[in-house]
Image 1 (cartoon, helix red, strand yellow):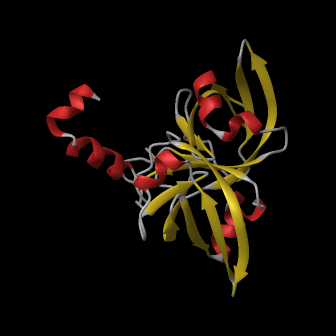
Image 2: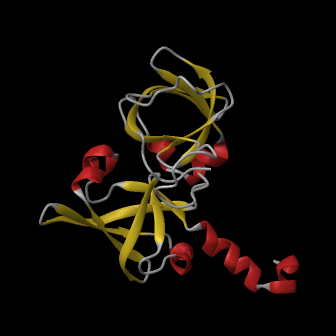
Length: 202
C-alpha cells in the first residue's frame, strides 16, 4: 500500500529482456533503501514492483508480461526518470490517498500551460475509467496523488504546484506523454458493492 506522495526521482539503468518479460535495474536517487529488504514493494511511476536484488545505487525488479501490457513500463528506456515511493508502514503519515500500486490504465497528456506559478494539465483517460473519475476526487498519475479540478468526458484537468513539478517527473511531461493512472480504490469497491447479489454473475 502507498500514499501517492513521491519520495524521490530515480532513473532506469538497465532493461534486460528475459523470455518475454523484463528485468529492470533502477538507480534510486535520493530514496534511502537502508530499511528495504528483498521482497519489499516499491512503486515505480505508480506500478508496484518487488525488489528482487539490492545494488549499491538502487534495486532490481522483474516486470511481468501482464504489467508490461498495462503500464508505460514497456516504453521505458535507459535514462528514463521515474517517480519512486516505498510501501508505507503503519506508523507513516498518510499524506495522499489510498494507493494500491495497481495501474488501471494508461492516460495521455493532451495539453499543459502555466497558470501563475502553477501548471494546468489536461489528461485523457481510457474511456472505461471515466466513470471512476470525479470532480475534486483523487487520482494517481505516475504514482503521484492528485486532486481532479475539472472533468469533461474522459478528460480531466489538474493544477500542479511548483513543488510537485520539481519533485516528480511531471516536470518532464509534454503533450503526448503517456502516464500510468490508478483511480480511487474506494470508487472501484463501491461499484462492486452496488451490484449486490448480481456481483457473483459479473
